[in-house]
Length: 91
Image (cartoon, rainbow, N blue to C red; front, top):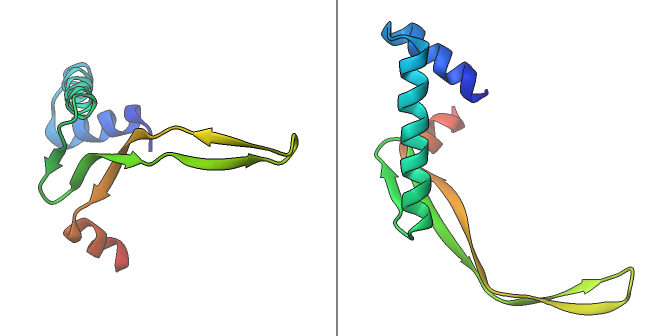
């Protein structure tokens, strides 16, 4: 499902114009993104959490050159679904 499809569904379900729904949806996504970038997790009860996961430094092999490289420690954004959401996927 694309962002445009989500906007269309929300507009149809609520009766609000697509332009307004798109503006609100993009503002919500921007707010979530900015919070995660600042290091603040975002909790959406019943849906899930947008969190930051820390990846430790590790060694990796470049098999074409037969060398070892070091991948530095870094943070990545992640999504963790709520138990209710994950439970619905099991059905």
